[in-house]
Length: 219
Image (cartoon, rainbow, N blue to C red; front, side):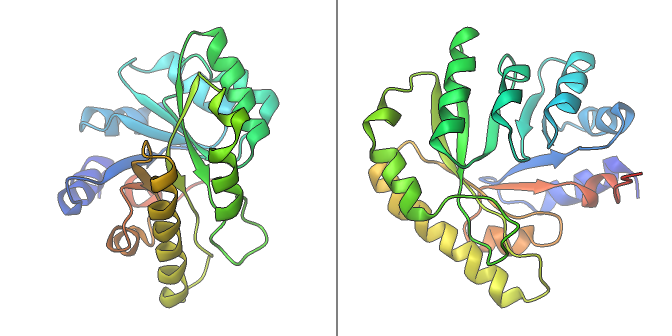
């Protein structure tokens, strides 16, 4: 199936309240343009440099989402154009995004990454860390970022019950933190293999790559 067919098939199954981020990392611009010409406007990249290069060459009505682990010293390369940063896992990173956004007179939307997986390899903060951050005076002084939701990545496993439990824990954390911070509206969880389950567990934003573009070539 073509990228266009894949995209239309996935979109036809999504509830209205769910946003689809097309994960385009490692894919050539021709592939992204096929998705763009099918109506897709939100693309997710995990390397800032690659995202900046694609942004330069592609239509300017695209929303670019940074979905990978963010190094603080690279924030400046995307501060001018990035729409949403998914993986914010520390106040230091939030502070840097705020500083770089200020230089461009922008307010950048961010998601706090909550660690829901049992694997050590996954990044993220605890629900308690996130709560303390949102309550802190330092956070209230950041005028050029807006925390609009949470992101989480489930354990890489075939055990559906475990994935479901992790997704539900993120939804629970979201409900609790929303009382503290009513601006929260997005729960970003679910990828090609588990996005249907994620939506059932409350996801409002899914990150889908291989089901749209085919498997990735890392060579």
